[in-house]
Image (cartoon, rainbow, N blue to C red; front, side, top):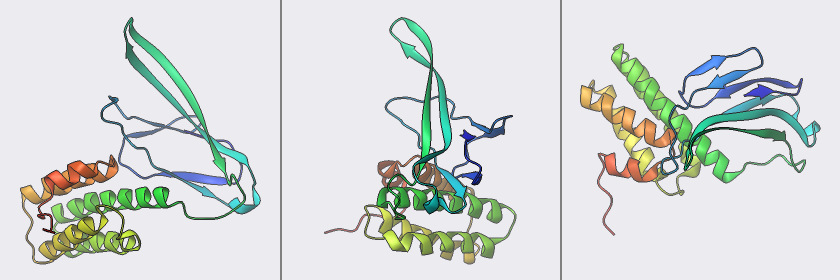
Length: 197
């Protein structure tokens, strides 16, 4: 990941993949990737006066991988430009916004586990409740109402000091499902039973 425009103050990585600083930017290690199990990578660019920029490249994402092909292993490289303001309008893109909120929910669960492990149960519950506030704007999207209810129930449990190794594992699984955008997996591991029609 490299920045290409002077108005880009930096970038935030929305998941907990290992990140290494390089001379020209950052390297994110995604490890093994499979066609049947794609991974999402969320990046948030911090740009001053983005509306004034027009259609310019803010940076680029260079993807390098060793790919299994019929003849053996082939090294491939692909470069994707990150463009600013393609049409001059400042708007929220629903798919991007929902993805961003799922990443925030994953991060909130990871933060809650870290705090609960340290004995800060109120802070852990607050982390989950902050995620609920963000998700509320998209409550009608598939799976979001269930995620909100699950986060609220988990926050209640934490405030009652109900935290065991199974809770830690559960939050890790749900965080992974949100980070990797695997709604089906989130439903399978959910402690909440689906509502009957």
